[in-house]
Length: 150
Length: 150
Image 1 (cartoon, rainbow over the protein chains, first blue to last red):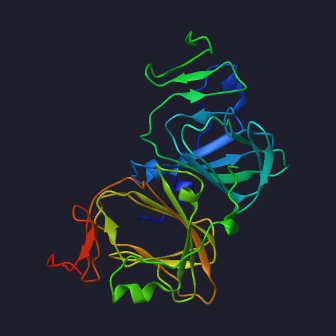
Image 2 (image 1 turned 180 degrees about the horizontal axis):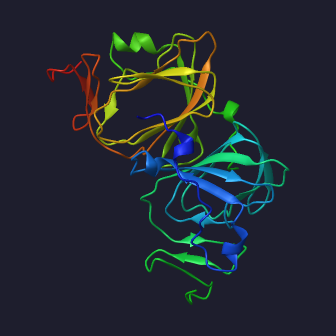
């Protein structure tokens, strides 16, 4: 059945970040819609940000194109050099290997729901300009900026 | 600027279908948002179906995962064995190489806007169960079902 019963897909606030960054992610909830529907080439997640939540640490990927579309509520898109409010129907794209850290922050008093899409098989490190954090793709783990593992 | 100025992206109703199928596509309008924003790994199109329009010939891809989310209005998702009405926020996914022909048909009296997403580098033939039409990926052209080119 190609139409996705959204409520039937398990929602989680799990994160793979090490502490202390993991502690900031509890108010971000997501459903892996694409995987639940059998997609293997693209990742699609429905993400709900409670008031005060962030979508991730601000980051950019070497190997993943990312695209977001807001479905309900509002969130601030925070980049290296600007902030832009996104509301329902607004879209933003982040081509792979463009060094512009980005995330969404819900500074409103209502939940914000958006879809986050990427090419899930894409490989490459992930960079976090605000945090002492780096994703080391070759070794499949997070490190400090100096390369020492968490 | 990652936020996409939707109105700045050229809208077209172009189709690569041969006649007579091309003649059915004039009321489908689309903007290639992903390409306009520099994405190379995923394709994202904003599609507007006027009343009576179809999103495509009913089809399935050997090599493309597809995902749609409705943003405004309603459209009927037509598959091999069922029809399902999709409205704002509804999502549907079509894993690659699953032989279930699908398209969206706007049977309402208002436009329907949706996003269509795929892994744009995916390769493979495309099958059209209702039409004497086949996409031959190796030769990069449409053929009749018997293999003769249009």
